[in-house]
Amino acid sequence: MASLLERRRFGARVTYLDELERELARVGIRGRLRRRIVAEIADHLASDPEANLGAAADLAGRFADELGTSRSRRAAYAVFAALALAGAAYCASFVALNVTGPVHASSPRTPFVAALALATIIVAPQVAFVAGALAALRAFRHRRDVAVAAAEARVLRRRSAVALAAGTATMGAVALAAFEYEAGLPGWTTTLAYACSAAGGAALAAATPAVVAAARLHPRTPGEAGDMFADLGPLVPSRLRERPWPFARAVATLLFLVVTAAGVAQSDPFDGALRGLAEAAAVLGGFALLGRYLGLRRE
Image (cartoon, rainbow, N blue to C red; front, top):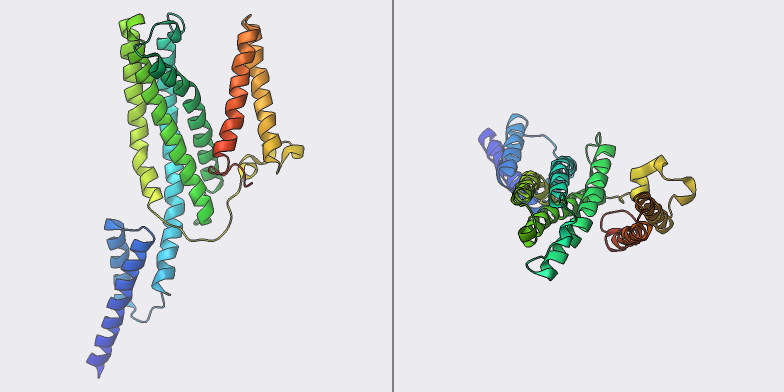
């Protein structure tokens, strides 16, 4: 009789572990991590066959929620650190390419490609900085949370991925601009630009596995994600809180005034105003295109 009960218990345990293995795969936990979790649960059941672990789907969901939160947080920090290194490389390369005058004053190999590279050099770093900084800020806000809502984890992953992609595009554009304008630049400037592009790209590549690991998981905790007002908190004036578009227009206006004032200080107010308009348009355009995707606004 005792041996029959043991066989039943063993058979039930194997069935539960098999189901748990399937559920872990369903929420994105695979490979070595899944085997380790199943092994730990098997050891637990071996020491306590009557342990009530709940449904296998619920247990797998809890693992996905906690791992999804920690990995999304880690990815945000990794991308932000990589962007800091890539930003230093970008600044060095930008100075090098313009040390003898504006790089666009030279004749490129292919005008269209060169213009695309220069546009990317201007726009992509700003996207990378905003997305990366907001990802790190939200990760910091949830630094003590064991598990956040799946929507929050998704926003973290999206911000990190967009920052990583924009940073990588920036490094590629730097190398492309150096190649396009090589004929009109001193040899050392293009060499430095290539080296900076490679160094920044390597830093971003090092952060990529963290982003990929976070993207593989599928947390299930219900709840909504906060918007940019949850991130910025008291930094937003009270009359602009919960009003995303007026806030975006205020930021664009402030940026226009700052860039225009810089142009005036350099005795070139017309060019400053044009650059200010371009920056303001970029802010509003980015907010329209990526605002909802990056969790900046809900509407």
